Amino acid sequence: MVDIALMKQIFATVTASISIFIAGSWLGWPSATADKLLYHKTDFNVSVNEFSWIVSIMDVGNIISPIPAGYMMDFFGRKKTVSLLGPLYIISWILPSYVGNIWSLYIARFLGGLGKGISYTVVPVFLGEIAGVKIRGALSSVFAIHLAGGFLFEAIIGPYVSFKSLNLITAIIPTLFLIMFIWVPESPYYLLKKGRRDEAAKCLRWYRNGNDSELQEMEENVQNDMKNKGNYWELFKNPKNLKAIVIISTASFAQRAGGISSLMAYSTLALPEPVPIGRKSDYIILFAVLKTGVNFFGLALVDRIGRKPLLLFSEISLGLVTFVDGLFFFLQNYINMTPYNWIPYVCLELFPSIYALGIGFIPVVFLGEMLPVNVRAHGSAFMSIVLAFSSFISNAIFLIISYKCGFYVMLWLFSIVNFICAYFAYKMAIETNGKTFSEIQNLLEESLKNNKKKSIYIIWTLVWRTRDCIETLRRLL
Image (tube, rainbow, N blue to C red; front, side, top):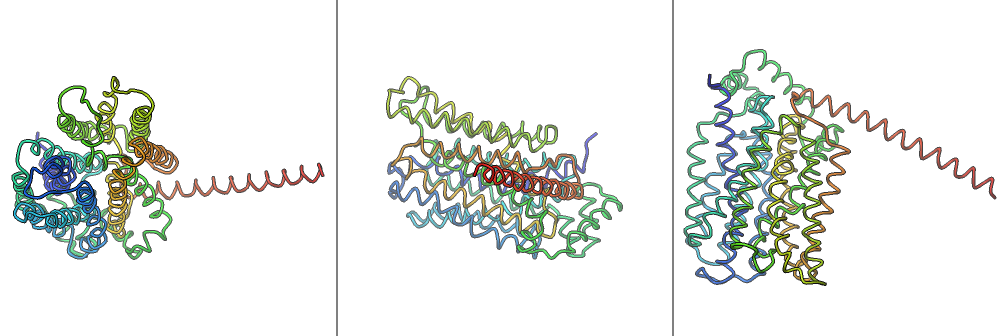
């Protein structure tokens, strides 16, 4: 028998995540258009330096928009804020199609970055609030599938159509998104936060056939969360919120500064010649296919294996992949590595496969689960800024360092980031699989107590060790 409530949750999740698909299209756009723009296959010329700025300026827009988006989704609502993405994205794709100059690309990418920041801030909160406990992780990971799907769309279409046609074809997607999303109800959590209980009950019935007891429990959670004022000070002052945002931010930093942003934007430039088999564009398409397809395995595993094991596996494995990839380019400076040109290509395809199993979507899942409703919007905005800033730095320095020092330097930096973040995840992250929001808050509280006990023990040990050392020195002297 078909579960109507489940189908409604899936419809709302897929529809809202189309905005992420469009952001993924903008992420895949540089790889799809690099040859056209750099090798004069468009109506205007673009230098390597200008292309680097075209890629990076999207992250500037992404850094600016999350904080306003956080306030907007608390003032106007989750649904209305997400709906604004339709017109914004339509303009961003149409502009470079009809205004053929470098500034139209700068503006279009900047607008795309604004949209990406809004979608990254609002959509994870929306998905976390509408999904049932047992499928919350799976539905939240749809976010990552759409992001990868947008990249795949550009990788497949880009090589076979003109620059203008690619932009116009992609502009159809935000139009469809806008038409579909108007049928999706508002988040019950937001409505309860605004005191609109009857509307919240109606929306809860639409999403989950929710009864009065579930509504009452949800209302109590919101009331408890709202006892503390929702602002950025509360986000960092409250120990539980601070630990949650540190866990989320560390995972977010690893996601973008661990290599994915640069590989998506510059992968065609970072692969050696000659190509082992086929063309470079074939490997970019395969990269996108794997990044999209493996997400479905992540979706299936996240509510079975758990969040933390998948996060650790992906971060450690990505550290190893980028280390091996960097080792190839390092050795290339001293010996002939042409017979081993296949190594970077294998590493390129391993990266999205491992990325999609954990780090690609776990930060979004954590965001929707760990933060209470009074600061969830602020935490989401902060996470979006961390993602955008990490991506901007990675993209801005990649070509400069790679051309001056060698690709291996950047790849080993990615490796260091992945290993360090894996260590922090091992030490700090908690398992949220199958837990209600209140249970997760209790887990954070308990982990803080344990950490406090550990800190006291460490301080106590250091004090007594220091005393013993001083006493030993006194005797020797």
